[in-house]
Amino acid sequence: MTLSLTISTPMAVLVDGAEVQSVRAEDLSGSFGILPGHTDLLTVLPASVVRWRLADGAMRYCAIRGAVFAVSHGREVAVACREGVLGDDLERLEATVHAEREQEADVDRRARVEQMRLHAQAVRQLMRFLRPQGPSAMARQVQPEDAP
Image (cartoon, rainbow, N blue to C red; front, side):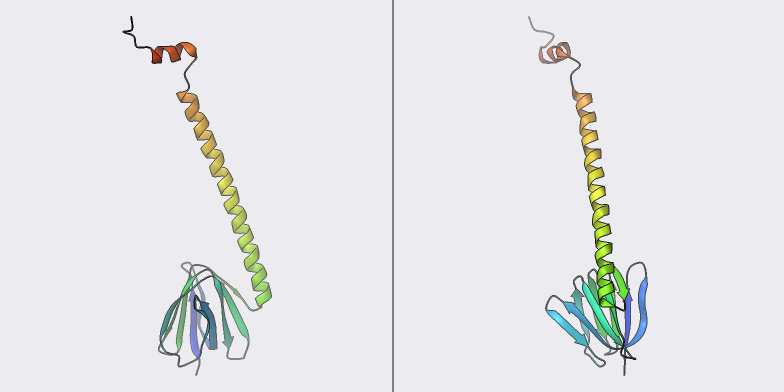
């Protein structure tokens, strides 16, 4: 007896009904394993790695960024994640995920710098429009025209 594994993101199906011997995952309570005949289960997975063993004994991995993990009918395992990266070597998968996270952090840094630049430019523009046009303009604004 085998399990049918499906892993999907909002944009793609990463694993579509693969026949596997077992699945390992980790939720906030710790690591757990799923074998054929497991009772129904629904849990939330944090950013982690889902592992599974194929019928030939080979291990496969998927690094996920948060997911909902469900077991139904003792044979169907579904993982719905925000983002996932597949791999067949855990060390290479770790390096790939690390490189992707570094690239995302760099993009975020550049976006923050651009946002700060635009904000500063907007403040300078506002100050230019709000600045009085010299001391006489300021005096006209402060003193009422009806003053004796």
